[in-house]
Image (cartoon, rainbow, N blue to C red; front, side, top):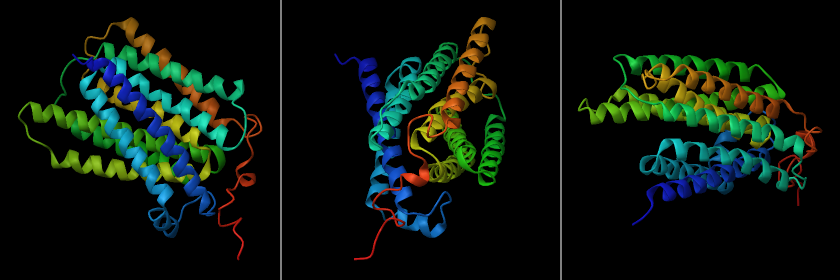
Length: 302
């Protein structure tokens, strides 16, 4: 007999590897355009015809499918924390790509974010119960739209690490909203209420908006910074909305709620420290000093 929980963990691990690989490949493809820290429409059109970027997109899709299957066949409390492996893998891949050592300065915030997020999801998943109240769909769409829009505007008006952090956070929030909408749609379908076209439209728009934020974040920062935002905020937003809007924590003991808040604070502290570290602190070259050899700015005419 197949151990479904073990299989679910294995699928989640492979999915995390796919996420990390996608971040590395797409980051390299974005910077190879030589378009600076802001992607233009013409650049986006070049990217969709770039085999490397498309390979990264395929890895991202594979990771999403594998993680969805893992959650479907295994306990959420076991499977969901496995996704934070993408953060560690992305940081290691980024360091190896640039020929630098993975130092304690880099690993400390990575492990802080990873452990904090794992603890938060474990506590929240262990106390999840209840069913969505009427009007939950409208609340999810409204709050999600406001949060993603605010972060996208902040990122567009910012520079450097703040821009990368804000846009990466926008992508993480958008993908978290997608998870909530998928769960809400599945619950409505199982209850015989059919599938809401508004929810389906919301999923599509959130995927597009999140994808735009992520690609812009790749253009303005290091890939493990972006993956940090996605890894922390995606499950954090999904669990928070599940608790606050879908009524999944109606019977949560007070001590569990306190533990969840403490873990969330630890995770956010870790990702913030990672995102605001300077390249010299990480022993990594500055972005304008590590243009790929195949980038437009370094390409010479034959």
